[in-house]
Length: 68
Image 1 (spheres, one colour):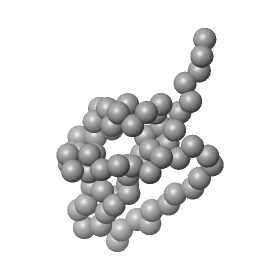
Image 2 (cartoon, one colour):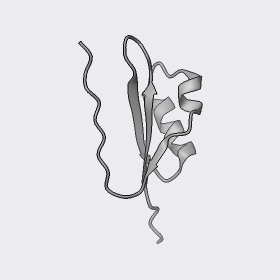
Image 3 (cartoon, one colour):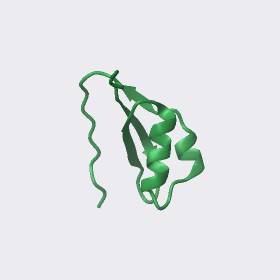
Image 4 (cartoon, helix red, strand yellow):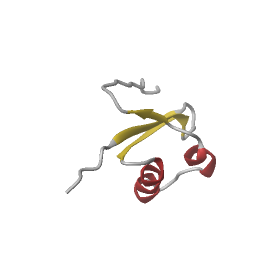
């Protein structure tokens, strides 16, 4: 059985309220990543999910400071 290589899809500067947020999904392709986000998020603006995410295939680190 062939294993599917997963990638980390990262959307930055999304889900704006007072400050921007971040969305991410670990999936084999971007459409699956979008589907997973739609299943988990109760509020997901279409313009945010339509943006092209960063695609990470090698070790990487991200961070986002909390607001307030």
